[in-house]
Amino acid sequence: MSPPQILVLALFLVPVWSNKMFRCYNETELLGAAERKLRSHYPQPAEPSAAAARGAELPCPLQLYQQPASTELSARSVSPWTYVLKTLKDHFPSSYMEASCLCSGCILVQKDGSAFQSFDYNSLTVKQSRVFLRRQRCSDGSGYYLTPVTVEVAVGCTCVRANSSP
Image (tube, rainbow, N blue to C red; front, side):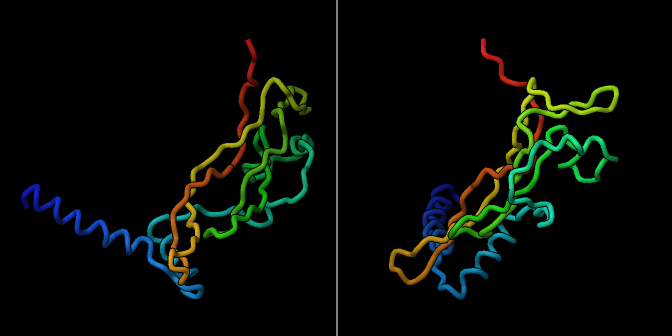
């Protein structure tokens, strides 16, 4: 195929592709279409269990370090976290779990086994980009189309040196 033929073919396919990309779905088709698109084009990471989620703010859990080590990474970290359920209206998936740091500093364990929170370090969230599908009304009002949107989601916490001002 010559370059001009490729260009003509591409110009022909762009409208076809964009119409398929932004197809209007009625209410009953929408969820199925979103699930298919997420599965085929935007695979979602595994969500933490609902048991790992906590709604209320918890204090920095120094007592975790007085017990045998947990198998949960979030509880063994020197920057422990919990998960909070978040909801995005008009998005698929509509809810997801997000990490929330339990300490502002980091937990340090002394030689005698006692633990304390050090503010020479900070607990910060580690973020990951995730693709969600946002439901938007079609221009003719007949239904909805789905557009991919990227959202930064906190997936854990890490310990970093505190910023020092010069």
